[in-house]
Image 1: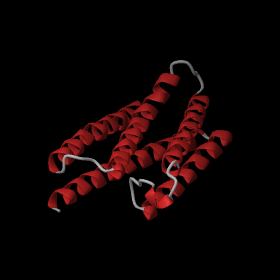
Image 2: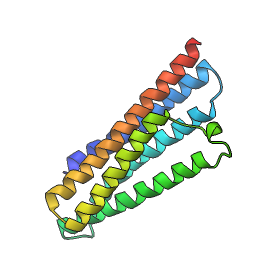
Image 3: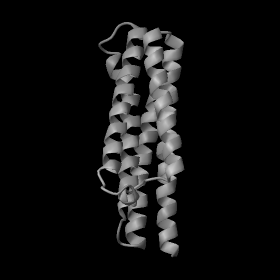
Length: 170
């Protein structure tokens, strides 16, 4: 399991590092960033940071928690709490604008809803399985949420690069 978590951390670091490529590409092509592009880059970096942080948490907690069930239940609850807080921060960013039509969006409205609802379901699963305490399910849900965030960061990176390339072609 340690090897799997280490792989997730490395992928998260790689995606965050590759965002520098998107940033350099965007700066070279157009020289400026729109509010949507800045928000997309910030969301990408935050999501990558979540992946790295939560790939390392079970390894750190494992040093102070002796029971594996308690380790994975605690890791899931901490992940669910931080994931929920991340949603609140994201919502405040978007809602801080007076006109909803002016609010910057890192992704399309439909993609945003899919990501939001998927994340809510994963947070709920983490809480339910942390309460139930089944060790296999605790591990599975934890890895599922890490996979979710890794894939979301990858999609965000791809979207950012495509936006940069489209703006360069225009």
